[in-house]
Image: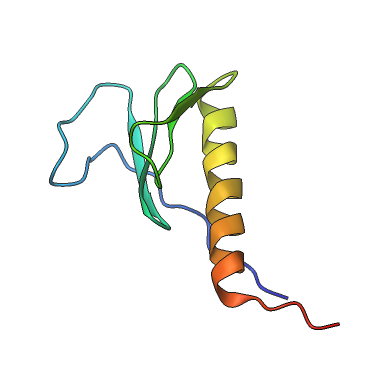
Length: 80
């Protein structure tokens, strides 16, 4: 079984981004996840793609699920 470490959220943006009030950032597979305090998730693998979720907690959970799926796809092999 693979257990993926939780994303570590911070209010400090990566060096190439400006600080946005209410935004949280987490480094993940493919880049940085960004979530707003009102539930918008900017995906790590595509900084031009975003999803509106119910709130910040839902956006963080969606980012974590995406991160886990991407990591497991990189390291797991299904053997029949």
